[in-house]
Amino acid sequence: MSSTRSPSNSSAPWIAWAAICVIWGTTYLAIKIALDTVPPFTMGGLRYAFAGTALAVILRALGHRLPPPSHWRRLSIISFFMLVLGNGGVVWGEQFVPSGLTAVLIATSPFWMVGVDAMVSGGRQLHARQWAGLTIGFAGIVILVWPDIVSGGAGGRGFIAGVISVQVACAGWAVGSAYTRRHVVAEDVLGSAALQMVFGGILMLLLGGVLGEWPRLGLNARTGLALTYLSIAGSVVAFAAYSYALRHLDVAIVSLYTYVNPVIAVALGTIVLGEPFNARMIVAAAVIVAGVVVVGKRR
Image (tube, rainbow, N blue to C red):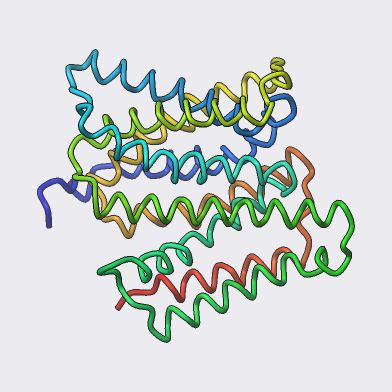
């Protein structure tokens, strides 16, 4: 076992992992609340520009050096795929998709991960098990959106557009992850994350301006609190906890947060916002998760 792993009786890494599950599970609700008065890309821009700047200031105050300008181009590329497409797609989609259901759809990320990895040079090729898992997961998405496709109403088209936006987010995250594994040397994880958030925040603010979002920006006590929570807890605190957990726990254990987040998000969306979560959605969610399990199964 690596020396970076914590002793089995240490509770700190598990507390960090639990924080990831709770905080990232609640961000879907916070996004839905903030969308009441904050347009999607402007929200992401404000969130990450603030979080990245705050994290960079904290790191510098602690004596840590940030990545040099020679790394900025690569970090900007990652920011575009993982934040502008990744987070931006999620926030835009939540305009039409319930917050809990959005978290369930994000669980399809492993499908995109294995698909993108298979398409790039030197990536792992898909075998029968992966194809079976992808087919199962796609069936779950079809179960989810088929009634809206058949109805063809305006609400249905918006819902379908939201589902597609969330899948674009998953694809962007997968491409950004593949690029990171192949072109970025892991040095100071938190320093790189700080600059990625700054660059991503700037890009999203610019995109929000191009789309005419700025005049629609408004904050009240409720949405301002949600945006503050996303910026501080959802970005700075959660990413620090994630980095700490990865240093002391096996990555397979840490990755289990992806199964906990949808449960928290669905419960909060139903209880706090009264979002619908009927039998069809439950069946679709179960099928999607089954596909994820098949795709991600290891020997």
